[in-house]
Figure 1 (spheres, rainbow, N blue to C red):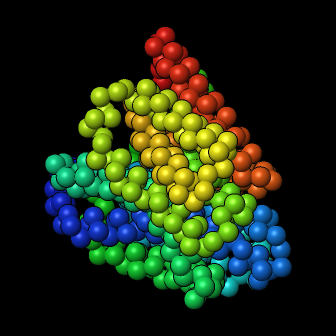
Figure 2: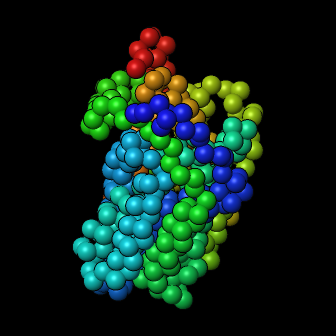
Figure 3: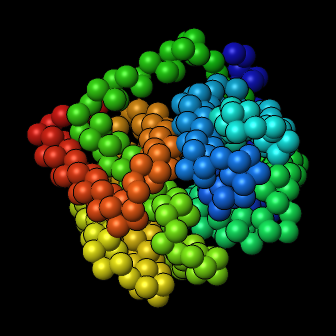
Length: 397
């Protein structure tokens, strides 16, 4: 690379308010594509004359594609540039989403959901990296926190939107609206993102991916990835179970249960200065155990609508606080491979999301699902504790 190229001044920092607005809205829409289908399952089942439980593969297929996309596009965005990757990936995501809307049968829809998941996975790694590089340093924490919050809030907001709109526009209409939204997001990103910075190409593209096996072979990291899978897998399983089990018969109550988790998602970031007084592994363990407790109580008591709403709000708070703690604890072990380690963090989030609906469909009763998930959360907490002992013994990447 020439001296002239290397000395080229870096682009000016993008305008903060419009950039953050576009990125937050895109994050809500992209991540929400995983969850928006959950309240649509009964209507889709009626249209295709099949069982709603069988259609949980529409959630799982998307999550599998999403997981694969994280591994592909994290390193690729380093290679070709954040903006360039998004200018390719977002239009593809819009097209794939539109094709789901006109799919003729469940098999076609499941295959297209896989493609949709891969395509929208261009945004999280490239978008987060772009903000970390381009936003003014004093505003980066705000930007990253806002995007992380949007990813979590999408689980509630898009389910609520799906339930409210499916009666008027149908499930196909919702996918059309999502496709239009993704196309608008592409135009918004194109407008606010600065040109990619010059990048020095070192080694082959495949060399970028070779660190992945070494990270997965590290026992302490592997155990923490297991906890990540458990935490988000359980989250998706609970909300899928609410939809499939019939434990809530009123659509209004179901809507309230979905919306009831949003205050927890908004509140936990405000408590971060106090929560940060505990180490990341301790926080992760505490909130995994809190999640297990709320699930076990839910299964044992069979609470009414109000009690279930309160328990779910506490459960969502545990998820919202536990995921950043696991993110931080994984980054602390990865050292020079932090970027790839966090891409794997996102990968296991997506894998957990893909397993959650299958777990919900496997249990015939909602209380049994709660007991099973509570046990899995305890396993996740033990995994973090053991990983901490291993890390303290000097096993580091």
